[in-house]
Image 1 (tube, rainbow, N blue to C red):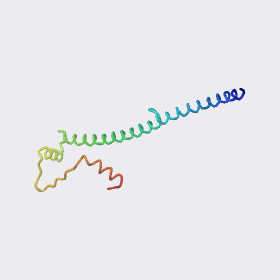
Image 2 (spheres, rainbow, N blue to C red):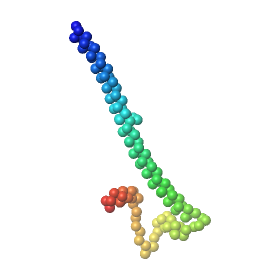
Image 3 (cartoon, one colour):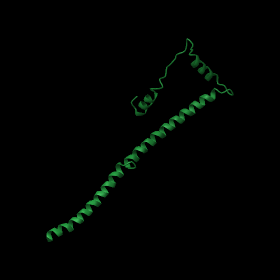
Image 4 (tube, helix red, strand yellow):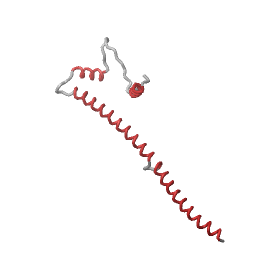
Length: 119
């Protein structure tokens, strides 16, 4: 009978420590993989950097387009820009001109190759 009481008394210590270890493991696991855990933080940080890069590219493109539109305004009308837009709209070119077609859909891929040093 005393052996049984000794086992029960020691078992409560082990159970308490086991519950504490399980609690720490539970919260540690969710700290790493939960909705607000470390992995989610790293993923959201990467998405934020991508969004900042896209915003910077769009801002540059907007500035470039605004500059081109300003050349078409009535105040200081740029003859070269007027001729370029007129030719683009009526699809007309002279016999001594060379036309180079630019594929805008493939342009980002070329830029990525240049930055990676593969071009």
